[in-house]
Length: 324
Image (cartoon, rainbow, N blue to C red; front, top):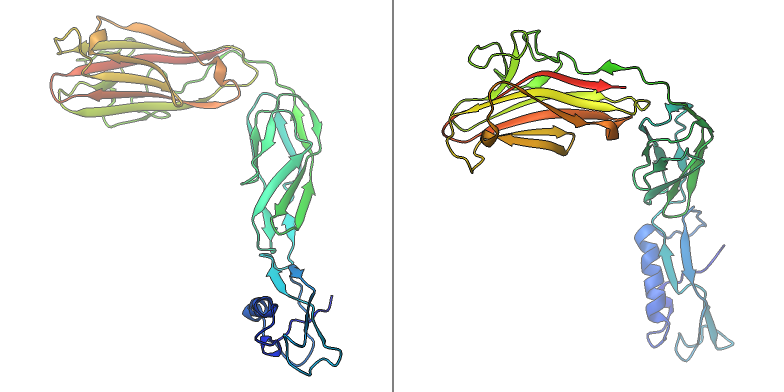
């Protein structure tokens, strides 16, 4: 399209179109420099026109027929620059029904607007985040899928990529115990993560079996100890059980206030909280279901907190995550 964007000096001061012409020319001059020759630019633009005025409101004598034509009264330049969007093809993917999946999608955008993402043909249970392009979820149905992901620039351009994603059936569950170093008999924490001094063979808090246990707190002063390990529960296993043996002794004499506490967590979920009020002789087994975490990795964590006086010791031994 070729359109005139006039100089406001060519419009009489009394013209009702003067302010529109001034605005249009101002928007043009803010982006480009006028020259005496034709120029081309690939820029999205919205143009408002046409405007007429007679010479009584314009420059006297310029138009013999008494009419002036100014075709452009407003110009709105889009935020883009006529660029393009290209989606990087992630290539062929594989997964397993019932096992969480995550696939980031990236795009190159030269249009200058804001990108949003859509996807078609994904396996049931998977979805794409419209803002980040991350495909995630837990596929529920085995099969061969051919997703297409599209990135849309807010100024108009878009780009797509298609790929294959094979979801395999979940396999049979193999009965197993998943925790590493479950009784702490290596004398070190790994693969557990723990605070200093937690893994102990001190006879003041003897192990239930073997020589080593995990001894949290017991300082008689403000203190926090931590012990954690991550496990992956296979999607094919319908039963997962987390168990451990716990002994609590305390110098606290109260029967009504929990001054010192041990919190047991699976991920962000608190499974149980014990305290000086739960003191016992010997070890007692505690057990919790982790079946809802099938197909996921979950961190199991013990956190012991002690107040400023009178010790409470939390001794843990013979841990297990049994799946079947």
